[in-house]
Length: 422
Image (cartoon, rainbow, N blue to C red; front, side, top):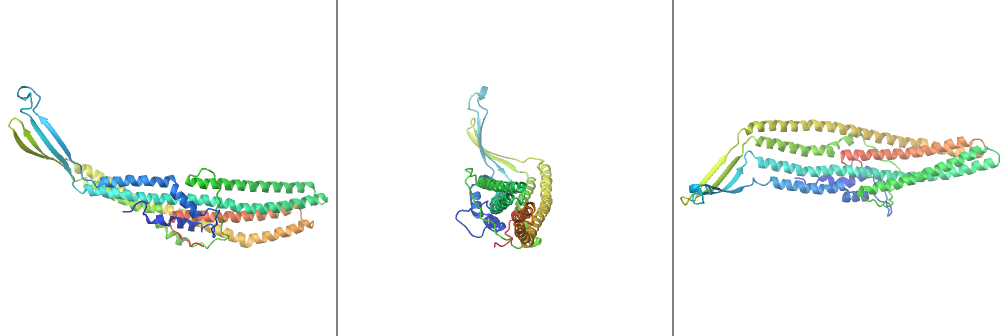
């Protein structure tokens, strides 16, 4: 029997999700919070996870109750007393003291224990699945915070560049080499970039609060995530991920649910055997001053017919479970393929942007600045080239974030650390 706190996948949760994001940063620092630290806070304080302790206590009590034998009862009855004539008093009364019980047939007690044990084990499976979902959401929020933080250096560099461009445009206007329109446009670009930087800082603050809410921290204390790694590791083939799919929490629960359905079938089969109510006692005959032994037994009729219907229902439910499992497995396979395709596309986009697009755009921006200062290029043309650099940098960052979002989903689906940490 598996307890909720002894399920083997539980001990791999932190490492598994940390691998999914490839640790997000390779060097631990004192100020930033690591992903493992965030996981630790969530596991210790998330309400949904803490609630499983109560569910475990409930299932444990059910298991103990299922192991109890049928209860017995003690009864006493008085007859032929406080009536009329010779029976006005207790002189002719009959007092009976009985002990009654139930003999269960067909293995009903063992079937109840098997069902209670399966339901108890199911708590551990459910907790494991819930923990994966909660930690996946934690990883997503952590990644959002890391993404907002990663945007700020890009915007700060863009702001510095835009300020230099505005200064050059103002100088050319002062010299009469360009209209004031271009100088004003350059200043507007500076203001827009400054606003984007401010919005990025606000987004980081909101993301930090959303992350802190995962462990019920509503104080709004500022958090800082570890920086994103500069590169992405090679992406394994889809089949490598698919091998880990049978370990998905959504599929693991079917093993326990199958035990529960099987126990229901056993209970239904056991119900075809009628239980025996028995009674044993002594009777005191006050008139004669004698004592007599009494005994009795009762067996209900027609139980086999009712049990046949219950067996049909239980067996149909057990058979339907396999079709449900096949349907869920197909859905998980499709979700896994979609996540892998997203990660693959993001990796290809990062490769194209960083190895081919960005180097050319940076060279173009440098050339455009020289051409503008030489009077061979307009401000709008220079600004367009600079905007392309910024767009490519943001696209590369977003692709890296998409890759890690896809890896979080793959990790949640497979529950296995399928990529080695950097």
